[in-house]
Length: 145
Ligand code: AMP
Image (cartoon, rainbow, N blue to C red; front, side, top):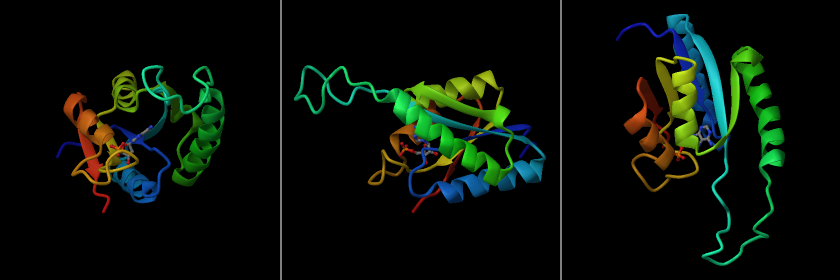
């Protein structure tokens, strides 16, 4: 295994993030790599006019979610000793944004959980699966039981 220089940790702030974050921190220390963290606020529509309206269609909670996510991201950065300049908070499709940020910061390893919100019944969650398929760098999917 070559030596990694810039590791990107993707967190969804779901239950099992701690073991994923610990693994990323360990690897960053082992390789003396820079560690960045990305969280993506998923902006897929909650309701679609083609289906039943679950909430007013024009209600956009992205700003509120971004604010909450920012607080959590900063707390995690302190815990992992990551510089605030190395935090990325994005809105959009998680798998696309994780891949885009990884390319932008020239990460050579993405660390994520095998499962988060979208995949408890599957071998790999949908974000993990999408990132593994399309990332241009190595991807470590930390096993979440
Ligand atoms: P999933 O495939 O959605 O079940 O999630 C698998 C892993 O992908 C999670 O454990 C996180 O590491 C990462 N992930 C999922 N959603 C996001 C998100 N919105 N922002 C950043 N990382 C995410």
